[in-house]
Image (tube, rainbow, N blue to C red; front, side):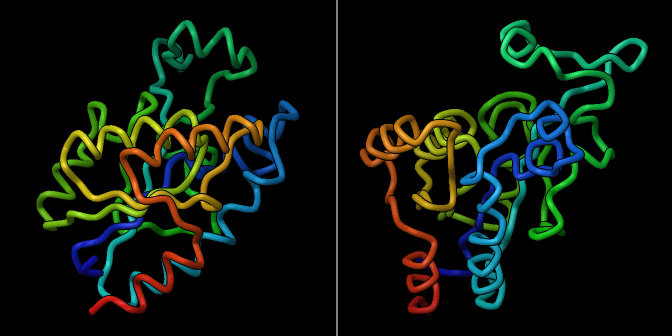
Length: 200
């Protein structure tokens, strides 16, 4: 790992997912392990930045359609019927990165699970000559897993934060970590910090 060629990439750590006044909070959706992620990831971000690294936030986006109603994929509308006008809309409070991690060096709007799908992420990483991604966020089996696999397909070295990502069910989180171990290094946030500090 070369810190200046390394980026921390967080997936979907936004107010609409984590803040009590966000879309999921208002709907009574959430999990303690998800809420704990920003405080666990922030020290790693600080160490990486101090070493010349980059922090990128990929943020789930619901594009406002006619009348402001969000353009939602049918499967997501079925899973999350509470999502409505204004939720995850660009520029809104809910769409924004949580205060604990804000601001990111770069922000990428994503409309699907993977942070690479139809976004400018790969362009940013290539332009900055980044070849290593440290990845955390939510959910482990959704956006995180899709992004890790897409990074692997692009021959990028990935380091998945085992305690820097979470899912709504522990068994799903653990099973996904096991599965992703075939394409990514899997370490704790504390272990990643030591790796960064030891790198030149």
